[in-house]
Image (cartoon, rainbow, N blue to C red; front, side, top):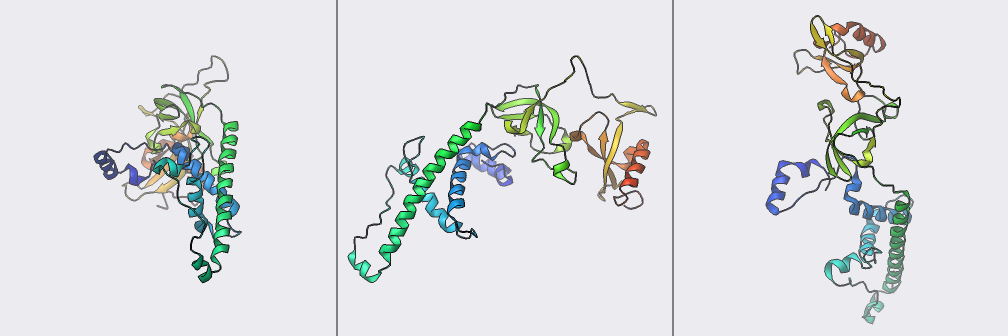
Length: 298
């Protein structure tokens, strides 16, 4: 089941409990979690791609026939068609006209039914061929999924994660490393994410890469310790990345801070009042970015 807000709401969860439904939600950015639906969609899309007109304006007219033909086609995995599997009989789809009088009244009927029959047979053949080709190509490219255990560290793909940077092409391609806190299944893992990310923390294995701790043997690179500033312990600011104004707060000016020794996933918005010891970096940021909100323009 997709992880849409309408399905994860308290109302839907309560309704599912009352109806005895046990929902299994897909993991983030991995529609293949609902593999059966996605595979059927691929087959139907392949048919529509090859049979719709140039402007693709008739795909909705072809969809019912494609759906019917798919459900009435024998599948390699079961040697049965889905319609017969569900209902125990084959659907009636006859083009034989048993009323000769109707041919007299509608002379174009026979021509139309012949065309429809040819189209139906073509669609059935194409769907069977598409199923076979998709399965063959998928099996060729499929590699065993990596297996992780709680405590393992992994990289998280940043492809579908919103970033504060303007251009996705020049952004980081992966985030982390993060620790695996729980194994949901062989293809889904719960990660320990920083609160600042504010995203669902269960990911499909396709979004994860094993983390190689070090390329130099025996080298240890722990995060830097807190620095002491006027008898208080603080994290050290590496760079100011952006600024914004939020008038819901008494101190409305905020800066996006990159911390020394931490990756982009730990970047955080901090009020200007918390960055009094990073005034040089703030001044440097506004020199390079004069149009961004500043203490004199907020």
